[in-house]
Length: 112
Ligand code: AMP
Ligand code: ZN
Image (cartoon, rainbow, N blue to C red; front, side, top):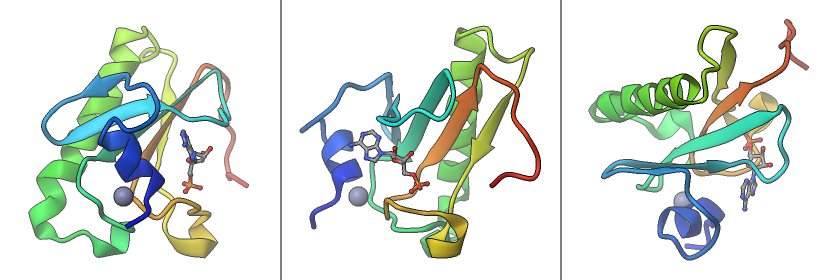
């Protein structure tokens, strides 16, 4: 399977900010905020629709890793945004699930 995020998770390309047994985190190559980090599972899962109850711990862990990045960078008090895009109307471009961590500027609502 030719998946760019599997290659990053397997350390075939790119630099990692975080790695543990379940997930990796790295800088988004087209940052939409001063801090834009992607947290992805090491295991290939195409969309949030493809997750099951067995993945609930993994999904919670992805959020915990993002929260820890915010704390490590002292961004937690000012705040940040966490986003999963799902399928085409959700704006998903890479079909390996990823949690966007965005911080360092004022976010707006509704999103575009
Ligand atoms: P999404 O639209 O939610 O699928 O977001 C995909 C994100 O992945 C975009 O923000 C891209 O900038 C980012 N991206 C795509 N390829 C790479 C890559 N090789 N390294 C880092 N970020 C990437
Ligand atoms: Zn993948």
